[in-house]
Length: 238
Image 1: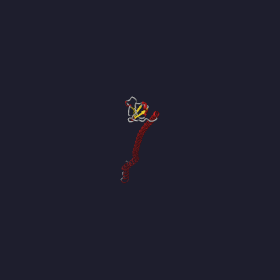
Image 2: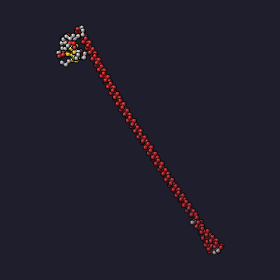
Image 3: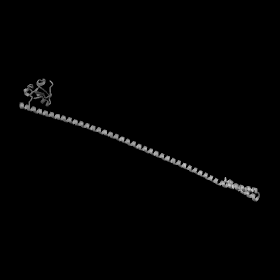
Image 4: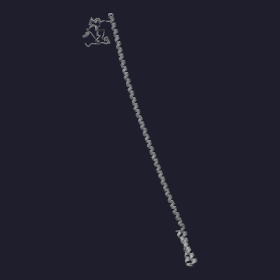
């Protein structure tokens, strides 16, 4: 706008000079001078305003650019902050998942170890129980064997005692061990004793039984049934 008034001022100035010097027309020259003065005044008045408007426009543009830059910076910072927060959240979740997995693995290993320990303890307990059972059976067998041996030894001792007693009794009665001559009457209790045993059947008879009378070659005599039983004989049923 100030440029237009400057141009008008210039034209009015040239016209005033032209009408004043080359074509002297005072009225046109005065009009040109007035126009030039007005144009100069308007140009001077409008020039600062235009500049101020320009400055204001530039300031607004600068402020707008700065505002936009600030907004862009804020958006960038917000995006960066969000990305950082998201990264932290993912890292935290990953760490929590890793710790949970490690805890689960530790618990699984602990449970497996406890299970193995229980199985081992159970196996050891069963082994101890089996060992104790076998030891008890061996001890029982050894005890039974000892009892049998003791019984056999006792029986042998009783037999030896009975034999010695028989020999002593025989020696006391006749001076010699009884000899079966084949013609001895086994019914005669005063001759050889009251108990008659059969050396072949290992059965002894008492007076009154059916087999009390037998061939004297097989006869063995005892004073009591205990002596006969100690010698390995059993009593006849009839």
